[in-house]
Length: 181
Image 1 (cartoon, one colour):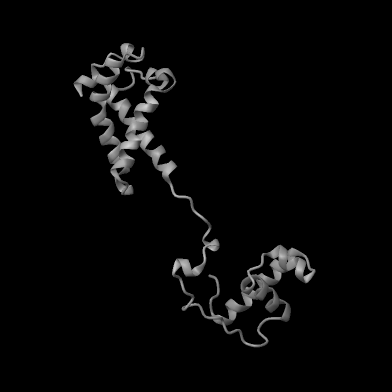
Image 2: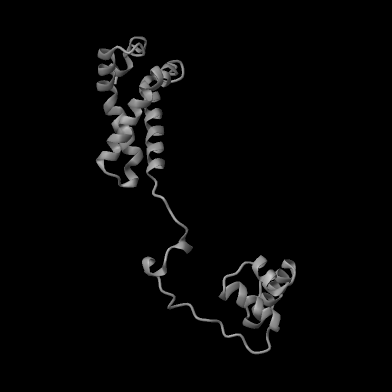
């Protein structure tokens, strides 16, 4: 660490290859350790850790050492500052690697291995709900339509659909003993 803190940044940011090689040799153990620790819980391969560590050095020398020029020894030691930069690069690397997702509704149930064995239809006693309430519940739940679609289909106002839906749920809760507190 002492070799790292003795790095001559003025020579380093001029692009001196020898200074850069010495800096990389001194900083690599710290940067690798911080990146490895940051990425440990994600169970990624060694290649990902090394790529993220390499990203740190690329960031430091990019745009004529712009990031490295921002280091302020009055605020932190070089090793502390590099640890912050390394952690940031590792987090950014993880964000870029994040797998693309798709909505669960778009994935066929066969692929998910999910079966609806435990889902049973609720037996609603005859006469408990009005015809309109039954129809609206069927459209909303069985056909998975939204309120606007049901309103257009039944040629009624969307607020009427919401109100009828609410009244039907109140009746069902009262009947089945699931009164809200």
